Length: 204
Image 1 (cartoon, helix red, strand yellow):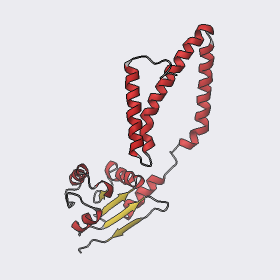
Image 2: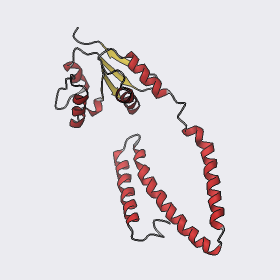
Image 3: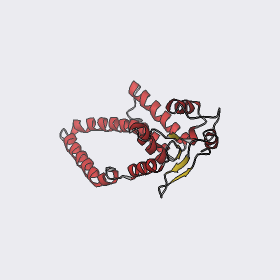
Image 4: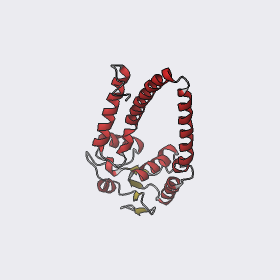
């Protein structure tokens, strides 16, 4: 109703319609397991339209029943508090230590100066956090094989690990391992069972 019935030419409508369309098309076209997260801006735009619709409806009701907005507002507040109470345990991640345990285990098991090839968002972002944000295991080189073909990622790797050899212009995990024979190589992926697969350096 806020978008269609109460629509009027205005910057707010132009901006929200553009953002809703752009992010929806991107999320649908991106087509990954978590691409629905890119719909959050579209949801925000949808919420604005809901607010406009409710506001106009409330204005019409107020003309007939002046006290109605207070009663309706109270009902909405109670509804929101009840929903928050019943869903809090489902969204509270403060006791979920899986990522922390995974990161600590991987960094503890990785050999010195190893190249750690990480696959999957869970493994990649966890190890990145421990390695780059917490500055743990500075001797390691954390590499994401799926990003190796991007020039910007190669530049990032060379900036973070100046001693890492990157065969170009389109390196693969295998060629990176071959060009760094003095470094152990590990492969990590977050699955049901946490594990790390490492091989010793090719040269003593």
